Image 1: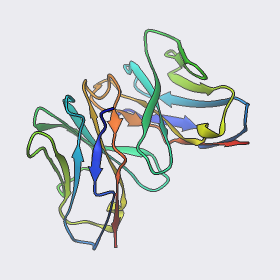
Image 2: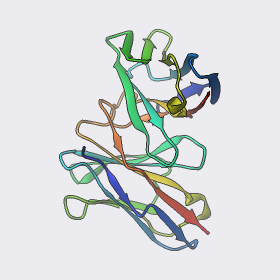
Image 3: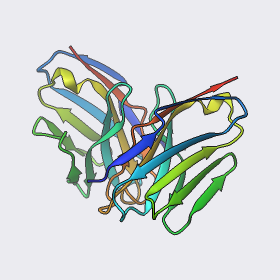
Image 4: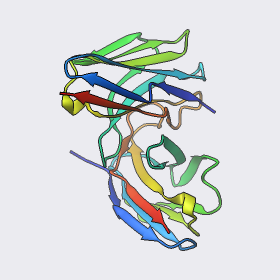
Length: 115
Length: 112
């Protein structure tokens, strides 16, 4: 069964360092998302991406964050200068149709720990 | 934006009993209401969803009911089993329909 894959599963970084989280969405999906989940809390929307551009972003997704689909298969989230409060589980998701109309398929997440 | 409230935050039930989780939402234009299950160390996975043109949907031991007038929808799990222990999230897209906003989650523990 096709699945969304994410790497790394866990990354530890120092505050101020740049981090890139990688995702390979399901191959025929057209919409891509990043969500984050701080330990024990709700799943929060960060950004959606369609047709090679951001379609929506939340207030969390500030200038420190960027997304890219560099090669038609990978979908990356970059945090330019990490802060302690960026520590969370980051989930990539993809869908065939628009995100509010059908199933989102989530990866297993990348745990980011900022020291 | 859309606001989704979910209750209770934790729910402990005896194996074989039923579990009910309720969500309320703010945007009356929402027309899609999924429920996701998150097992430990994994991403959320869709278990059931309902669209606004029906009031109830069932899939074996799980069911979702929708009350559009009151703007709430509920997940019902009957004959609970230990493997039902997980965190459950409701979600809804709001008017724009281009992303899901999740509720705060319900940690369900099924005691054998």
